[in-house]
Image 1 (cartoon, helix red, strand yellow):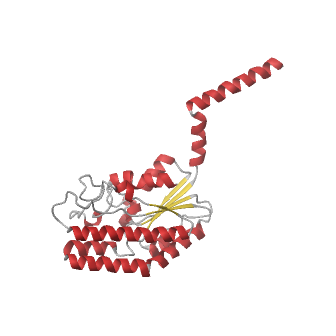
Image 2: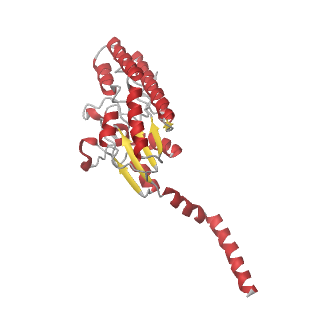
Image 3: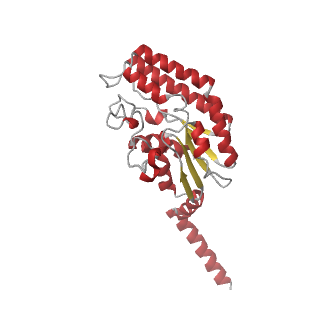
Length: 269
């Protein structure tokens, strides 16, 4: 009897050592930690516009299999994954059309929103097609909107998310700077226009970060991961004007989704 207990104890010690050395115990713990419910909300930066490989079932929302939420889900195997982000979405679109999968069981939510509310597409169109003075004037209008109206709109969508998913970790991701100043571009926008657009992106990110923090959410900046990969960098992870598919202009490529956005979600999930 004593020998049996001793043998069992010895076997237990050996097994524990093997698990520690092989990492099998860690792998098992990781699997349990990954068994969570994940919902991905937001605009085209979350749906993956610009990355290609769109799910035809998503229609005009253009959800890409290369978008960072899909990549995160593939790597982490959550117990459930709902992908409702949609191209062109504004804050009211997220509230009205994307929150259905959220519940008290939701563990993780990712979200990009605010750029369309601030008139991002019109800013870029104005800057590409019109003068530098008109471009900078339009940028300043967008900044004024970020001051006056966007905070309340963000509060509305953030409150709705928290109401429907009271226990979830919510990660709000920002937007990249679009241009490397003094970079390789020899045509297109002026350096003054590029500087104004980068400044507006920083301004928007700061406003989003403040409202996210006020709701207890985590803000993930992608400025760092995109540094060195802006337009005019020579190694861009963002489309410039794409005349063949204009909707992909100024959106992350597949490399921007996997190298720019995914690491930030991984660092904050």
